[in-house]
Amino acid sequence: MAMTINKLEIENVKRIKAVKVEPSATGLTIIGGNNNQGKTSVLDSIAWALGGNKYRPSKATREGSMVPPTLKITMSNGLIVERKGKNASLKVIDPNGQKGGQQLLDSFVEELAINLPKFMDGTPKEKADVLLEIIGVGPQLAELEIKEKELYNQRHAIGVIADQKEKFAKEMTYYSDAPKELVSISELIQKQQTILAKNGENAQKRQNVATIQQNHDFKKSEVERLEQQLQQAKSQLEQLTNDLAIAQTDAMDLHDESTAEIEASIADIDEINRKVRANFDKDKAEEDAKQQREQYTELTAQIEDVRKAKRDLLTNADLPLEGLSVDDGKLLYLGQEWDNISGSQQLMVATAIVRKLKPDCGFVLIDKLEQMDNITLEQFGQWLEQEGLQAIATRVSTGEECAILIEDGYSVVNEAHTQPAAQPSTWKF
Ligand SMILES: Nc1ncnc2c1ncn2[C@@H]1O[C@H](COP(=O)(O)OP(=O)(O)OP(=O)(O)O)[C@@H](O)[C@H]1O
Ligand SMILES: [Mg+2]
Image (tube, rainbow, N blue to C red; front, top):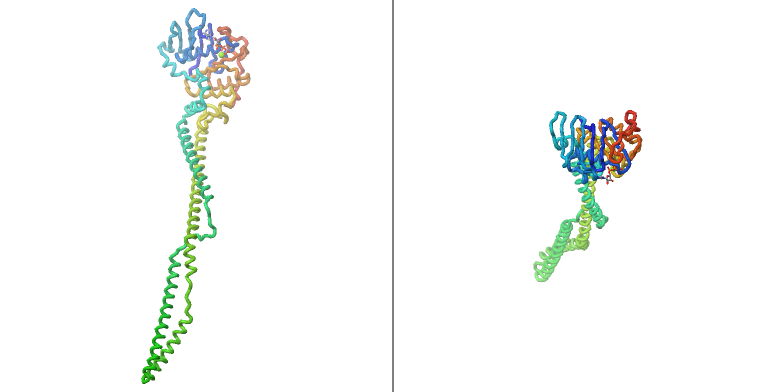
């Protein structure tokens, strides 16, 4: 059962002389009055009474008072919290008459409920952390955000390299006239060797001619010298003449093939291969850049997945208020960052969030409710009632919306106060 405040009795704290308030069990109780009358002092007193000495005002005792401050708060379950005496020492008595202390108060008092400005003035990250604490997805979201950041940084680094590689590849020369593969020199050398071998054979044949010629001459002289063997030599000569004729004919058709073209090709090969290697390098550089770009695209998809997981996490969470979300560690309401939502909306959002922090704490203190116009006030009050939440608020006003007026440190029940007709809230909470 959430604890609310049934009754407040305060004397001689700060600007207060004597104040007694019995707030509505749920909904909005507005403490009105003109400036400097002691409205905020009432909230400061509650914070001190319930929040402990760290909320003790720097000048707690009312100036001019001959007696020390006294505070008495009666909670909805009958628990009584008192501060009185010279040291304003704390006394907590539970409904069974058992004594307690600050620890007991801390068990049901939500610190932000008595110190809403602490939430309101927090950094965007602190606000988001409070919300995440409530919906219990903080660690998962933090993990996803770390993962997202890692992937993002990784993608950024890869993107920079991809750009560099693409630029590098683009600047490299490409020879469109060069063959696709490196040219092999061995084939040409083989060709050359075949030709040289054939040429060798030709030389041999030429040599043959010379030899036969020699023999012929020799035989001819032998014929002269050996007339007696003329007959025999003549026939030999005849034979040799024939041979000679054949060999001469053979030799006549011979022609040497040129290796000049091949030599030129060999010389060209170095240049061709230089171009082929350059093309290899460019192809490789382009492939490299392509792979880098593919990796970049893959990381983009992964980042999108993580972002979706984050959205899903919050979409499925039980949020204190429809329209709340967290992005990049910042609290958003209806997609807007804190400094972009109106003052009255800030108060509503803060109240809704603080409400969920400690379910046992059924009240919240709100200073400076002038932020809200009368229509918003009424809707806010209805929503508080629906939530079973008690809000004690101050407002610079002496209008009918105020249940209590503070005048010169004294509380006065506002006779003109009208309770708004109970009707279902149309507020989009
Ligand atoms: N111990 C004290 N004794 C007497 N007066 C004090 C003491 N502490 C603060 N004050 C005075 O109380 C006044 C402020 O009181 P408080 O903040 O409660 O007024 P308020 O009604 O909330 O005013 P506002 O409408 O401007 O917010 C100031 O003038 C301040 O000097
Ligand atoms: Mg004030």
